[in-house]
Amino acid sequence: MKKLVINTFNCWGCKTCEETCIRCHPETLAEGSSVSRINVIAKNKHERVPVTCLQCEEAACVMSCEFQALSRNEATGAIERDRSKCTRCHACISACPFGNVILDKKTGHVYKCDLCKGDPECAKTCPSKTLVFE
Amino acid sequence: MTVQFTIDNKKVSGEPDQTILDVATASGIKIPTLCHFAAVPDWGGCRLCIVEITMEKWDGWSKVVTSCLYPVKKDLIVKTNSKRIVENRKMILNLLMARAPAAKEIKELAREYGLERTDLTCGDSKEKCIMCGLCTRLCAHQGTFAISTINRGPEKAVGTYWKRTPDECIGCLVCSRNCPTGAIPFKETHGKRLIWDREFDLVKCSVCGSFTQLTKEQAKYHAKKAGLTEDYFMKCEICNRKDAGHKFLDLMQDPSSALYSDWGAKPLPHHAMPEPTEAWKSLQESKKR
Image 1 (cartoon, rainbow over the protein chains, first blue to last red):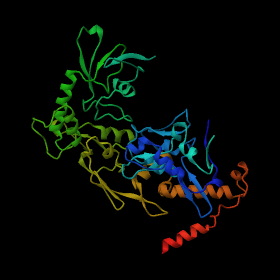
Image 2: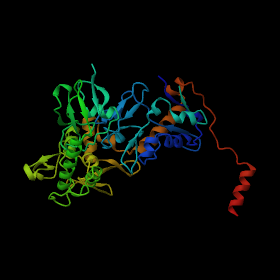
Image 3: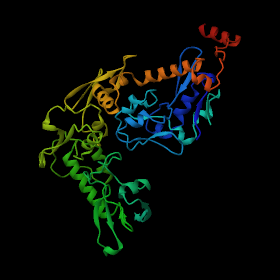
Image 4: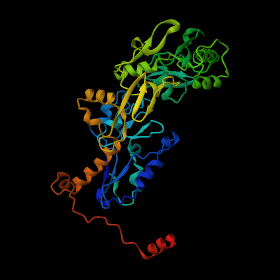
């Protein structure tokens, strides 16, 4: 199964991945949300790393959801949110120890990386080969 | 073993444990609903999802059933917009408008069926609740059981046990956020949430001081369910993300960590910002002028 590999040492901190993520989710834009599911964290002038959902094997978000709205897509290996089951209780946001479940404060909806159904856009547009899907 | 049948003359198939609504949704056929929610069991409370069903051996006789509850059957013939169904849905919306005159969503749905206003005697003009019961089912599914239907007959309503402030409520807003007509009000200001006449404190992030999305009761509830302490929920997601990023970077730079050796990382020179070119410097100067 392919994984999204993050080569931290290459990261320029340009945030192209964030912009790509916002624009490559038409269903999210249609809802009026422009959130990025990947975020570049800069520790200081020299160290940067893009942080996104780690698709944990024993995911805290999946275990916290009372309504079974988060589940693994066996084909892509990613944990996906079923919008028709999500009640927007925000338990998953607080459950993720890495803060990778994103909240859109305007609509109350939550978003998380679903590996773009198996073909992540951020890996295609990363100029420094930090994000690689292999 | 799949069950083959038709909806609006379109051949569809489903599993034996599915309802007509499940199969219609999966096949892209739209049936209007109000009290249906995928995560909780269906109840048939609003009656808006009614469809007309018949079978060849019924000799032209048909009946009206709620598609959210009726299980699929081999060779069933389903009509979602027959004349009888449209008339029935119009009456249902008429009744709902009379019961909940303040519900905008009902008025919009009624307009789609050609009904501008109700000719029946209206109830309380500020009422939005259509008694679909979705809020009570969501609260029950979560395991909190703070609200239910109370009283009988015309007095029947959704409320808390004995109309007192609910001790079981954790202030999660699931009932309010998912009500089809927005009938459950709540107020949220300055880290306090008010719902069902009870005030909740939102958890304050121990690092940045901003308020998280959880109330203290929610944190307690989830901590108990997961076997954790409440400290787990004391950081907001932005601080969690920042700390995760910093931790990864520390691990990658630490020569003694397993991560460092696993990845065969070498201490690469830091990416320093390049020196500004002459063209850049003169551009900055011209901007200042």
